Length: 440
Ligand code: NAD
Ligand code: UDX
Image (cartoon, rainbow, N blue to C red; front, side, top):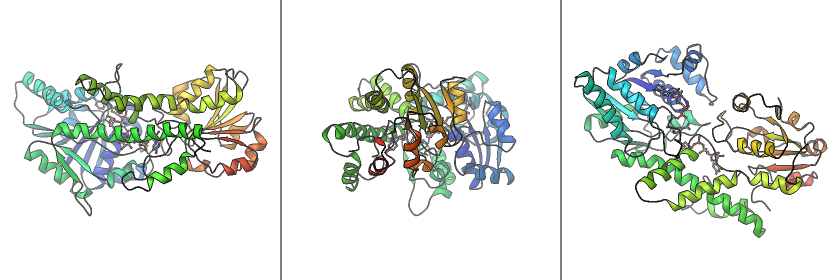
């Protein structure tokens, strides 16, 4: 099949490369010429494990191409995926300007049947807006060209994106005409394994499904985070509680890890957007508002612990910070708890030396040339001259550090662990004060 992917970011590039991997001809379009230049020169603009090999293999096979030429992109694919960003607007609702610009481009330039697929996370009703935007462009041109609009939200996780796309739990398709449904079945046939993965439903339900999934997962995390704070107050241990409830199959093991708050490009913005959608429909979502409030508070939990130890005024204090990305295996810094923590430390007069295996370039871009933030090239190097260590992302390389060495370097030997990485007995045995999230 000939497929165009509009938007070559985390979702667009992974989708395009994986669809090429199963034999399709794929053209990825982006309005950012720098991204396309890097890709054309054989680079990858993001850090995503395994993606470089899939891209290289399919470029070499002549199945995966990149362009900034909108006309070429619209003419290329019968299938047109829209995978552009949907960032939060000022009020938290999803900003659809990029999605609708992509739709208008398609309407302006298409000459034959297209299936336009909303892969971006978009609020209920967006497919209707995309349909109307295309219709309006066709009307202006005075032509009639057939097309279908489909909702096909993406559930991949950063850091495991290639695997998630190649081996999906389910593929949600919101479509209401047979031609589009048949094409979607054919498109995803290579991703079907032992059982039926395609869940076909009406478009609005598909749009809501994406938000429901992210909101449910965010709710689990915020609930565990609040319980962790409570556990500390009651002298209980959230890790033991997690094991006690995760073993109930009705609850399950996933997404029960308490920490210093969820971040990333999806949960924070999708929770906000669903709250706005619900408010617009006159149906407030009290639970979800609480999820968001709890997460905002959770990003401050480590700072509260630091203040309890060192006092509100942190002038002259220096902190080592391990982990910047919102989670391991990505360089994505969108809504990363580290950003809030660094700002809060700065606000109180402290300085920071950070280490992250892949997200330091992105952090430099965000914080610019700020003398209060320096970078180390190795985890232990970040500890030089530091009062204490703060851990924000659970990268594997932080799993088994030399606690004795950490104790010897830190001026005020304490670890503030926002990801519950260690058995508390280990750092404590080395003479370190160990503060985690909800641990005894
Ligand atoms: P991203 O910011 O990494 O990429 C979006 C790309 O679209 C950018 O490169 C931008 O230059 C490009 N773009 C914008 N307007 C364009 C246009 N008119 N034509 C061509 N290109 C255009 O975003 P992302 O993280 O890939 O997310 C894309 C969508 O997928 C969002 O709606 C997001 O919520 C959703 N999503 C993201 C993830 C994730 O883990 N990142 C997972 C599931 C769903
Ligand atoms: C999420 C969804 O999982 C994915 O299905 C969707 O397509 C996009 O949004 P992503 O943002 O890449 O994926 O990462 P995810 O692994 O879900 O983690 C999100 C945040 O939640 C991270 O900050 C992570 O640290 C935090 N988290 C996750 C917890 O705090 N506890 C957990 O138990 C799990």
